[in-house]
Amino acid sequence: MAQVYLLNMNVEQLAIVNVISGVSTLALQRFVGRWFDRNRKLIMFLGRFLLVTFPLSYALANNVYVIYLANTVAGFTNSASNIAYIGFVYDNAEDRRTLSAYIPILWCGHVNWFVD
Picture 1 (tube, rainbow, N blue to C red):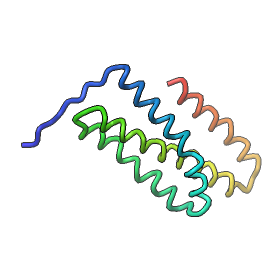
Picture 2 (cartoon, helix red, strand yellow):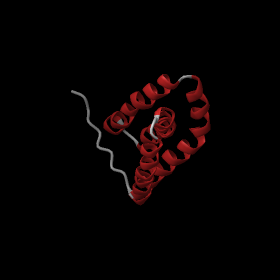
Picture 3 (cartoon, helix red, strand yellow):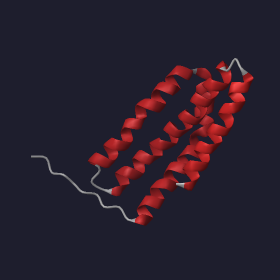
Picture 4 (cartoon, one colour):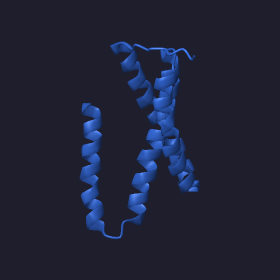
């Protein structure tokens, strides 16, 4: 039978996870933006496909360093979401009023992320 590990994280480790995710997002934002200009569909696909790393890392990790590594991948997936989907909306918006209505909704989502 497979041995199941129970990973208990304390508050400091959880804070480190959030910092790693945020820093990797900022570090990869420009790289993903340049790559997005060359191949939009691939970035959108990889951004969603690599989201599977998070549940798998929490389920299979036997130490916190595996989770730290998985959250460096969060930088790519967050950057892909920030750039690809918002860029897609901006490029394909025919009605500028609809686009201007989308911006406050996007802003509220980011405020909610910072409040959590």
